[in-house]
Amino acid sequence: MFALLIIAALTLSCNEKQKVQERPNIIIIMADDLGYGDLSIYGNKKIQTPSIDRLGNEGILMTDFHSNGSVCSPTRAALITGKYQQRVGISGVITAKSHRDKGLSLAEKTFAESAKKAGYKTGIFGKWHLGYDPKFNPIYQGFDEYIGFVSGNVDYHSHVDQEGFEDWWKGSELKIEEGYSTDLISKHAVDFIERNKDESFLLYIAHEAPHYPIQGRKSKATRKVGGDFSPVNKGQNKAELYKEMIEVMDEGIGHVLQTLEKLELDKKTVVFFFSDNGGTKSGSNGSLKGFKGSVWEGGHRVAAMVWSPELIAAGQISNQTLMTMDVYPTIADLIGLEIPKGLDGISFKDHLLSGKKMTERLLFWEFNSSVAIRKNQWKLVINRKEKLPQLFNLEEDIGENNDLANEHPEMVEEMIKQIKIWQKEVAPEAK
Image 1 (cartoon, rainbow, N blue to C red):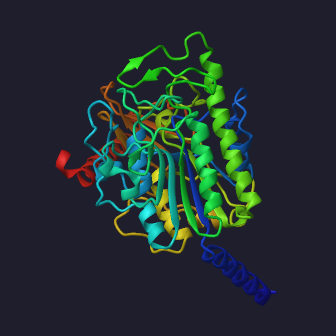
Image 2: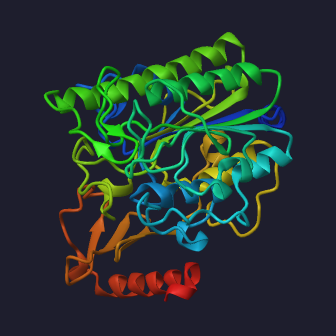
Image 3: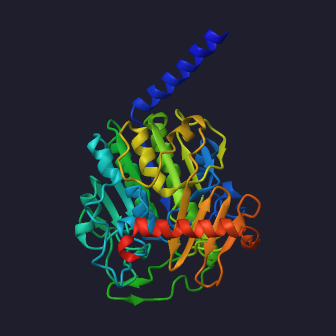
């Protein structure tokens, strides 16, 4: 019996290695400002998201996945570099008005560059938000193809940014394209898959939805070149438009999954889905405190799931604490690459494939002079609007309502010390 168990264990191990050695395709789908409570799989009763729900029901649903930032650019920087955003110089939003000369340094290595070096075709469709100047364009950061917008948001119909500039690119050239941005992003993603069906590929689908402006398929364009803006969704039901925006995104994700199945690529593809930060007041963060832009859970605990019919068992729910920056090393691990040195993120491949628990570690969030640290179930928040640090046991108090700082002064002191060490390490020039 013991010998049979050993043989079975070795067979399982070999099978897992064989599956991964087949170099799966990688698809990363990022929603924009999607709330923790905006999906039906997370309990929303009004918004129907069958395709996104399918990813979680047939794969692994994350309940403790966090965006690195509580706003757009920082999380995107952490995603593609595998590092804390502070370490790569993008701790805040790269705005259309004040930061048109700023962007992610070309010296930073991205997951696209790693995949491309390994022979993968790489594409990004949708929102970039890591530099307005063409020199920061995705095609110079490891992506073979890019169609989308470089700013924080565009009019879903005219594709004009917040400052009145046209913002729809093909590669490093402006190329205006008619259509609802969510549909265009989905269309180009499907086309990329079809054209690269015989190649190993990495596809980054960076949706705009449900980020402001709140516009549906039939809404009128509200932005014109030069800054001539009209009121958004005047006379329309904002809640219904928001619902539509998420459901249209879900529809497009359904087309992606259908394409994978049609081309028999579903069993050799890993699909990651998550949001870039917590939801705004337009959406729902469920029972979480705070919204986008805060270091409360509602600012960075996000809906997330991973789907791969061949590699990941269906129906799993994970309570392991994960971060956006963990995606890069996980991708490298999945496609058989050595994980680059100097990353802050860690691979969760073994957690996906075999349920192995993650290594305990300290995690940090910082934005607008507010900072938080997480150690297991304990979270310390230093909010710029509050005079004293606040300590919460998230295992018992996910809503961050019961401050336990006075009961654990030594823990508070140690966590503050660790915050200072981290701040000095990731951004020494700013401290």
